[in-house]
Length: 86
Image (tube, rainbow, N blue to C red; front, side, top):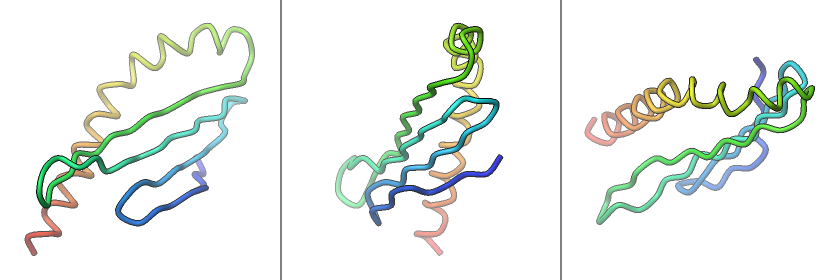
């Protein structure tokens, strides 16, 4: 897949959009303050478009990928925290 960064605010958020199989995926990754010098990554993803069957199956698909996305966010967090200590 090709991803396009459509908005970027340093130390705040990044918005990434991609279209695959007729479905537009709009994702926003945000750093939420979690105390002095700390933040928690948060991601919101919206999928739209595609055929009726794709739209009906989207909630099921989103449930299936939720754990994979959580692992990705945890990996980004670990990478960022490791960089801060280096």
